[in-house]
Amino acid sequence: MTTRTQAERRRERRAAYDAYLAECPSRRLLDRISDKWVSLVLTGLADGPRRYSDLGRLIAGVSEKMLTQTLRTLERDGLVTRTLTPATPVRVDYALTPLGQSLLPVMAAVKTWADTHIEDVEAARETYDRSRQ
Image 1 (cartoon, rainbow, N blue to C red):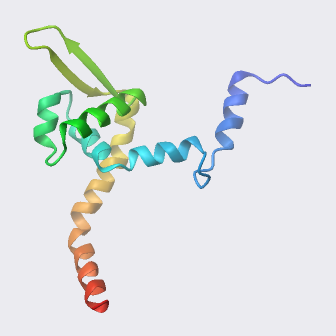
Image 2: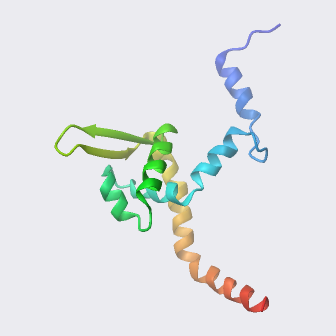
Image 3: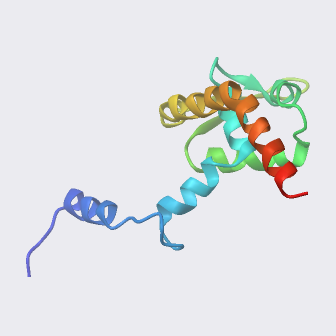
């Protein structure tokens, strides 16, 4: 029996990932980062740390529950850090980690694509809806 290093075992596990399989960890990560609140929070933190209330004001339509839930999952995944500053009232800041920052170009590209092509998509929807009447 050959002995493998930890790096070799990691490479083998990484090669075995297949996002088309339901149980694949990379699929669960894709599910997470494709969530609309996740993309808005990440891009909302692109310019630097923000307080919870600032994020809530920035992201129209997000409930406190969803913002809290999203920030907790991003913190758990290592994409966001939470810094508590003792004060009255307590100050909580959120910032991207280096891992979270590495995801920004992808999120920014998707946001830019959506901003650029929304009119095309709306026209396609109208055409589709008219053809179904």
